[in-house]
Length: 309
Ligand SMILES: Nc1ncnc2c1ncn2[C@@H]1O[C@H](COP(=O)(O)OP(=O)(O)OP(=O)(O)O)[C@@H](O)[C@H]1O
Image 1 (cartoon, protein in one colour):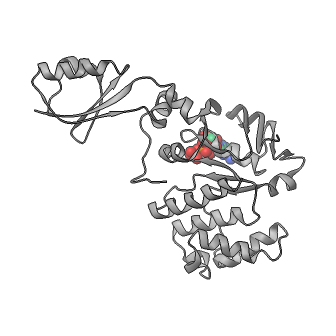
Image 2 (cartoon, helix red, strand yellow):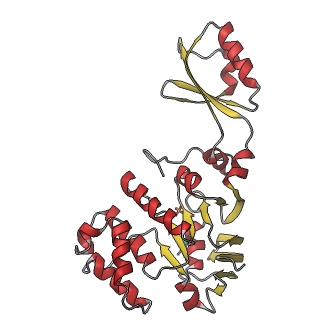
Image 3 (spheres, rainbow, N blue to C red):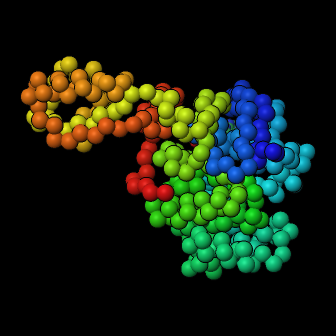
């Protein structure tokens, strides 16, 4: 089976700065794949090379079997990229922008598909509005629409939900999930790990230009042992014996990290001996964010306000 995206020994340097240090990556057709990593890890650079927008220093990339340099046009046709930055010609309306984009691919009579995209991305009310008059979130919807005009089999979304409200995020993911069900391969970069966890089957984590983890969400999260316990106590004090387990304090609760589930019994016994009343208790499984924190050795990254995908 020809991979949807195949990257081999990809290096990229900007002068003395090594941005990609030899990336090998295969994404299968039909996958919903996430590329994660902190700011500056090299995600956008990798995407730009796959999209033919940036030249690699060495290595090769193919989209549906087409080399992105020697078969640029074919590779580009297979790919729809939703870029991170909002760049538009401000004088065209939404519908005109999409018609022009269709023209770039030599597509005629693309009207019905354009109308379908406009409908799914909830842009109907704004279809005849000039781009300059749209809000940031609306412009982002048009970026998504632009990437889809030629019905590419592979869709790459570079932080599509940054700065976007919850309603749009949900609508966008509904549409992208539908496209994935219809067979499109989806590659997503996001800082919202809950989004990646809810949507994607496989994840690559990048750190300083290298892939440091590449696996299914299930394998990644089950590789982290132990659990977290969230406790609200009365009186609000943690016995000294439990203090080494405390990882943080959130909204009046103590968050304890346990290496093994069996430690739970010992925690409860200590609380009983100290005559503390448990007002609230939750046992939490390690999630993708915990895996990310352990691999990257960083603190929590920003969270979406409310998420349901
Ligand atoms: N044109 C350029 N010239 C010099 N350095 C660059 C250029 N483009 C990117 N870089 C550097 O390459 C590194 C990787 O950047 P990149 O945008 O690929 O990271 P990223 O993982 O997408 O980050 P983010 O999550 O912030 O989008 C950064 O250190 C960045 O400053």
